Image 1 (cartoon, helix red, strand yellow):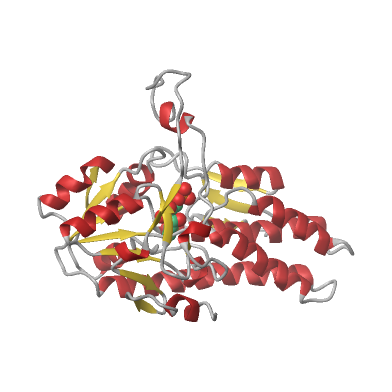
Image 2 (cartoon, rainbow, N blue to C red; image 1 turned 120 degrees about the vertical axis):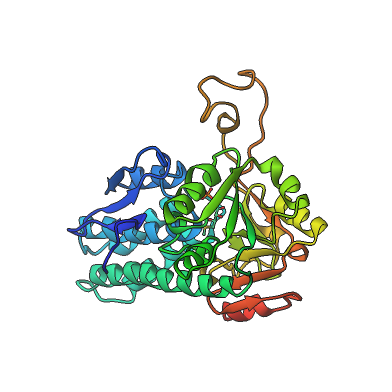
Length: 347
Ligand code: MRU
């Protein structure tokens, strides 16, 4: 597997550690973390040092391989793999790619005889990454067919290279479009409370030379009303079979506004993010995080009384009736979604 400088997740040169760009420090500092212990891997996922559904999956796959490589191909390796998978998989509940990738790498191991298991795990972990690069390229190409040169596109959270591989999903059309000479105007929701839009999306688009304007989340209605937005692009953490899509908190508010203003709202979703076991959005577990993220994080001083109650759901579910289309690597799925998503995951 050949890595590029901006890959947010990779295996170390000796193959014995997982490396990530610490996304909590961007855009001010680009620091690479080298991780080889279960606790630090768990913490990196939990604290969003590595984040975005596909990137979490790629990272988890590498982590399971690294832990096995360090432990050695002992008799009880399958039990140890189950233990580590359960632990890493519990770091965050909403993005399905986390448990999906852990399961893939686990299955690669147990399909082999002792002595072959660790090499098979590395191959599978690298395959997950290689496949994601191709998936993102295709999603970007499909995304580009949905917009016209010069369009204004509203983004929410971060679904670029940091959250995936290379082009990203929700930012794929913007980044590929730039390479092909399109001039889009991105309006980037800052994405309270963890500011993935401000810190990561505006950074990625700005670095790539895409014209981008940062807005607070509560300005979306106004920029839509002013006619600046021709399409809304968002990623996905878990899609249910009926087309309901969980993504960063605030995504469903964008979809509601888009419907009101008659603007198409698109979800960019690799097939690995469709949960075959999830019939509708009601079955999706929404991660709840500490209220300190609302009150303190990113502020010099707390912005609310110490004791005030906070509610901090990290995701919301956009109802399928608000989604104009779901863009996958196998094509653009339009309503009625019926069993189209089930067919994509082989159900
Ligand atoms: O909490 P985060 O930053 O991991 O949430 C990420 C998102 O909501 C992304 O939009 C999603 O994972 C899709 S990434 C291609």
